[in-house]
Image 1 (spheres, helix red, strand yellow):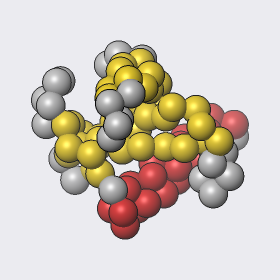
Image 2 (tube, one colour):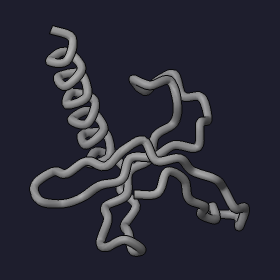
Image 3 (tube, helix red, strand yellow):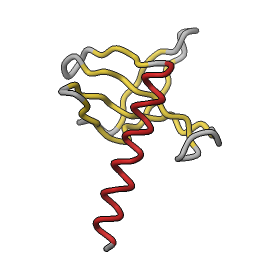
Image 4 (spheres, one colour):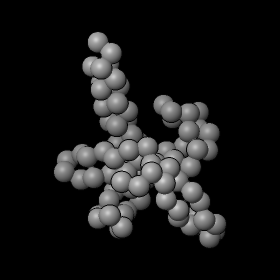
Length: 87
C-alpha cells in the first residue's frame, strides 16, 4: 500500500492524498485517505475519503451513507484495537 497518491479533482487540479489505512468489510477492500483539509464533523478533525479497491490501480469512490457507515466502522475498529493494546 502506498502512503500517498495523486488524483485530479473535478476542475482538473492535481491533489495529493495520504492513505490513512485499508479496511476490509464483507470481503471488499477499502482505502481510507485524506488531503488534510480540516473537517470538524469527523472523528479525526480532517476530511476523509473512501475508495472501494477493485485492484491495485482501479477503484470506485464511495460516497454518502455507505461512506459514513464505513468510516464509523473503521473508527470503531481503531478504538477497539487501541483499547486492547492499552489494557
